[in-house]
Length: 151
Image (tube, rainbow, N blue to C red):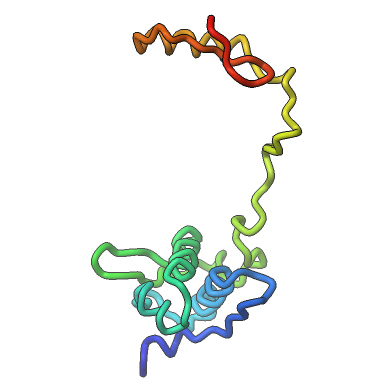
């Protein structure tokens, strides 16, 4: 039996999740249901990408998520292998990894900058110190409204 025929997911190009996530979930389910057993060698990224008509990046992302979640391991020069599934990992409800909806920590929208919160005095001191340490006498410091001023 062809090793690749074991990995034939029904991927939906325009589905709710990106292709790499669908592939990740499929392989994860195959491991959890023990259709892929411990120490089973997975196809190379290139072979699986060619077989499924996907880009190598898509397969690589899926494999990286599987490694991150400890479902598979990469052995340099040998390929990818299924890890032993621990009982607490089987049939976990949190099937989508945290990469799907990362928390937004900072608002980087350029019109939302609060000029009063930025430590300009500290910034200018650091800029001057770095300029002096580098031996440059061209000391420009930051102006709160943008641009540079000569000090």
